Length: 73
Image (cartoon, rainbow, N blue to C red; front, top):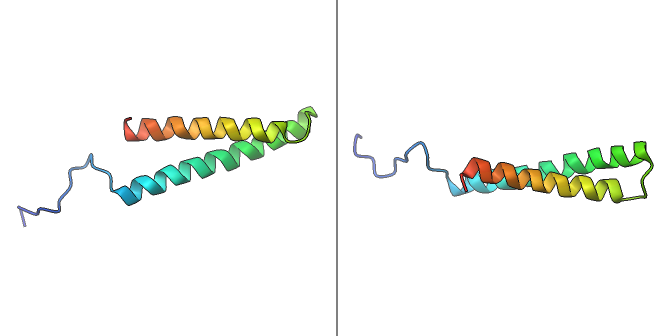
């Protein structure tokens, strides 16, 4: 038991866990910030779709930042 070859160090991430985290961060960032952009666009009266597009881009950028920070890239 002490010499388990399948034992991982606490710093290693499984590929399934990493893929799920990346997908989750990207989808959540785009959806949540896209919705907030839509709300801001409705409130500020900007042309249709501009608030959503800006919100989705901010959400994707924030998600990529969090992914890089989590994975140590």
